[in-house]
Image 1 (tube, rainbow over the protein chains, first blue to last red):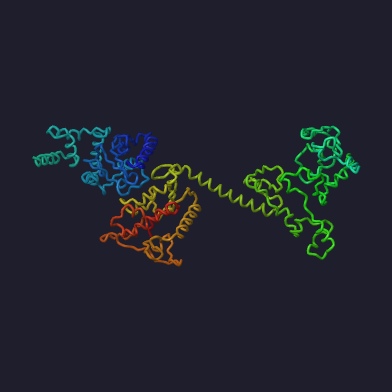
Image 2 (cartoon, each protein chain N blue to C red):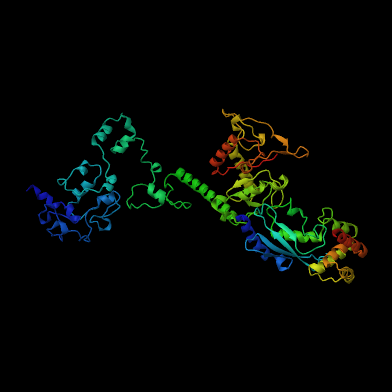
Amino acid sequence: MANIAAQRIKREFKEVIKSEEVAKCAIKVELVNDSFTELKGEIAGPPDTPYEGGNFVLEIKVPETYPFNPPKVRFITKIWHPNISSVTGAICLDILKDQWAAAMTLRTVLLSLQALLSAAEPDDPQDAVVAKQYKEQPEMFRQTAKHWTSVYAGGPAKMSDLDDKIRRLTDMGIEEHNARVALSSYNWDLERATEQLFMTVMAKN
Amino acid sequence: MADIWKQSVVCRYFVNGICREGNNCRYQHVQGARQDPAPSTAAADQNTSPNTGPCRFFKQGSCKFGSRCKFRHSSRDEPAPSTAGASSSHTKTTAPSKMTNFLPENDGKEERPRAEEWVKAPEFVPSCLSAASSSTSESASTSASTSTPLSYAQALNPHGQTSNPASEPLCPYAEASGICKKTDCTYLHGDMCELCGRAALHPHNEEHRKRHTNACVKQHEVNMELSFAIQRSREKSCGVCFETIMEKSSREQRFGILPNCNHCFCLTCIRKWRQAKQFDNKIIRACPECRVASDFVCPSMYWVDTKEEKEKLIVDYKEALSTKDCKYFNKGRGKCPFGNKCFYLHALPDGTKTDVGPPVRHHRYADADIDFLQQMILWDFLDERDNRWMYSIDDLEEIVAFFSDSEDSDWSEYELFFD
């Protein structure tokens, strides 16, 4: 790893650890290996959003050309958000792509991601299904995002009606996560979700 | 005997402590205490009463015997009445204008003054000259007083410039280091300059004093400015590598000043950022911190705080570049893509400056409407000499030569410049 990248990550690491956001438990960075090429980030769901109360884990890969190139960041925790892929966790955020600036740090990246959770950009989506729901059925989106937060990110909300629908599908032998994705994608319409799931099963056969 | 009269003359060797004639000396041994016939052992015994005549060495400035001198050290010029009966004959030898001064009185046995004392020897006054000047008053040296005989120096320099205390030179040792080890230095020792702590202020020459003080004040201002610059640069860290710039290796201890914002970077980092290929020009031309675009980076040894300092730095930078021949223009043989926006000198071999017109523009993408100036960065070229640049191998060698010979200068590299 280029010397400058490693040196900078070391400094940044200290910066994040000392920052007040850490004190408020809003962001966190951990080392994955000793070479500073891979880190684990964690951000708290911002208040007054469906993500409140959840903790979202991120995978941060630092390229050799850092800080002249942005770090590669993706969500490990599954999340329901128009700019984040519900499948891969890939993030659509300009500063992680063409709007990167060399003065940005792990801290500013994590804070930007936190800001992204509170202010989605449905017109520049990563996950088209989520973005469509966000625009057309905002309340349904809120419920779904909240549900995902509680299931995957340790959020507080328990939504028994949604859980029931998932259980109906898992009872039919569908894997829980697949059931949740299908239901979320079809606005928790059990019939259409079931149909879609079995269509794919049949297609596979 | 004819020597009888000598009995009344004080033996000058004896009074100085040594007379090898001992008791056989024909001159008077005044202090009576000295009966020592062995002349070589007589060294001490000097604290006897100094009631002899005035010391002639003292009168001329310094006496190496100091307080131990047998003769009277008195600042008065006229010979004081002495208890010694032969005082009249003694003072006769101290009169400076007498030729007898230089006559050996005692078969050349007289103690020779040390070489350092030579400068203090009484002025040699040619008696014929003084006689001539007094008799022939129409001669050129009429200005000289006829009452006092001319000295040799005065005869050579009738205007008396050397005697003007204002033009006398300062002791070079004292002026340079403040220390002159010679206790009897005949040069002028200047007054202490408070600024530089050296004895460099001429005691008589006001002009010299003023000049020295001004030079010192100026030097002091320069030093202060430098220490302020170092002070304000000390803590500055680069916004890209996050390192304290003054703590980096000496090669990298340089600031890259952006003209349009006040964010701090080391030159290496900001240049590297501005050469990043993976981003739009709009992004890399912008400050990595505030995204304000700047057309170029100005190298600097120190951080600049104020607007004035920064403007001065940039003006100096452009000025320095404008004296260097543009390697692209190549004294008219080549073509500079920056045109008249180039910071470097576009001059023909005979020195006439030429305006090559505005920068060359071309469409990089035929299908897009992006019209921008061709980038021309040296490192770009060195790193990626694929078909991106329209240079031949000859150009490359030339540029490499340019790069290596100007590397040590502060204004070394070509800078990205956009319209």
